[in-house]
Amino acid sequence: AQSVAQPEDQVNVAEGNPLTVKCTYSVSGNPYLFWYVQYPNRGLQFLLKYITGDNLVKGSYGFEAEFNKSQTSFHLKKPSALVSDSALYFCAVRGNGTSGTYKYIFGTGTRLKVLA
Amino acid sequence: GAVVSQHPSRVICKSGTSVKIECRSLDFQATTMFWYRQFPKQSLMLMATSNEGSKATYEQGVEKDKFLINHASLTLSTLTVTSAHPEDSSFYICSARDGKVAGAIFTDTQYFGPGTRLTVL
Image 1 (cartoon, rainbow over the protein chains, first blue to last red):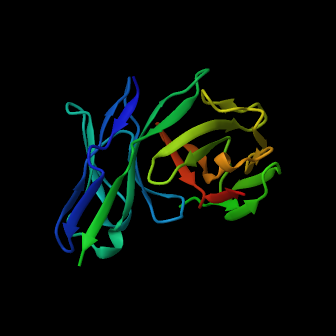
Image 2: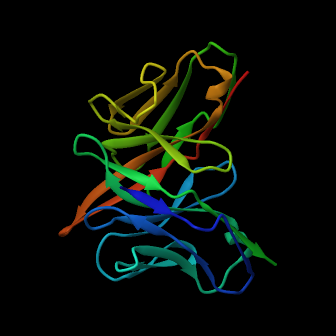
């Protein structure tokens, strides 16, 4: 079955501290993995993706994510959190749709709250 | 990065009317666009996959006659909610798939529109 799990509904972190938002996935074949961020009443903004190559992927706004094939994880990280990072974060994996098409499966989202 | 616009951003309509939402990729061509629905504090629910020049593929449980999708060009897809009812009130988000071949790698990223808040009275 194709799925994405974000085990934490909310993550609280103090400003300046490192943050981690967890994601695990289940998909057949080589995964295409993505992280998106959503601010209130807005669409999703692309942060980063893993398709192939280095397991550590760097993206927008200082975020990075580490692909771990053995643990089927793709955790989002940032060395030093900012209050402005507070938002809803979605992990996604590209899976198989119908008739040979692709579809994207999203996790349930993790709300990040960075405290000043 | 690639930009996707969505119009309108907010619409309020009476029950029984139809509402059209436009999704445009502004600086790239998108052979595939997706339509999602998001309920408060929940994840995105894929409604349908829209392919340019062909019929949309609907997810299980989504009424194709109620949610009409047209993808007439490489930069425009429309979602029409026909005979809208209060239970159709939601946040609708489109995305456009930017698939490029960069060397030996096929890059594949969705870029999302800002969303449309539909309220049916």
